[in-house]
Image 1 (tube, protein in one colour):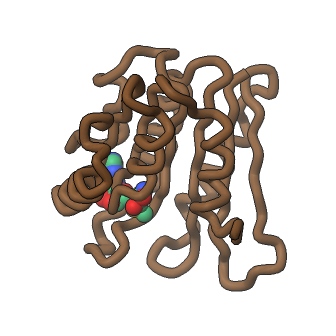
Image 2 (cartoon, rainbow, N blue to C red):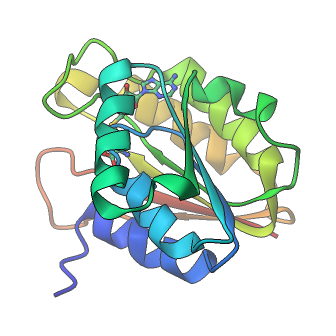
Length: 187
Ligand SMILES: C[S@@+](CC[C@H](N)C(=O)[O-])C[C@H]1O[C@@H](n2cnc3c(N)ncnc32)[C@H](O)[C@@H]1O
C-alpha cells in the first residue's frame, strides 16, 4: 500500500527519474535504505555514490547492500556531502537524494546543519544533468530545530524558475512539525 509517508513519497518521485544505467548520489547514506533503493533502480549498468561522515552509517549501509546483493552497484564514501563535486563531474548525475537530520538510533549530535546543507544542495544542483531530480527530506522541530528547514526553504525559493522546478509538499493536516519533502527538477 502507498502510505506516502516521507520516504515512500520521495521514492515514488525517484522511481520516475532513475532507470537502468542511471548515476545517482545518496548524500546522506545513514542506514542505507535510500542507497539500497537507488541501487535497485540503477541496475548492473548504473552506479550510486553514497556519502556519510560517520563510520557507523557507512557500516550499516554496506551491510544492507551486502544482504540485498547490491554491493557492486555502490561506492560508499566517508566524506561530507559538501565534497560531492570531488567524486563526479558537473552535469553527470541523474538523481541526488538528501535525507537530513541524524542517524536514527545513532548519536543525535552528529547531524546535518543549515550552512553545510545549503552549500551541499547548491553543489548537488551543479552535478545534476538536465532533467535530473534532487530529492530532499527536510525535518524540523525536536532536536532538529527550525534553522535548517528555514535556510533550505529560503535557498530553494530563490532558484531561477527558468532553470528549476521546485516542489514543496505539505502534510497539510499533520500536527507537530511534519517532515517536508522537497523535489527539484533541473530544466
Ligand atoms: C536521517 S539520516 C539518513 C537516512 C538514510 N538516507 C537512510 O536511508 O537510512 C542522516 C545522515 O546524514 C549524515 N550526515 C550528517 N552530516 C553529513 C554531511 N555533512 N555529509 C554527509 N552525511 C552527513 C548523518 O551521519 C546521518 O547518518
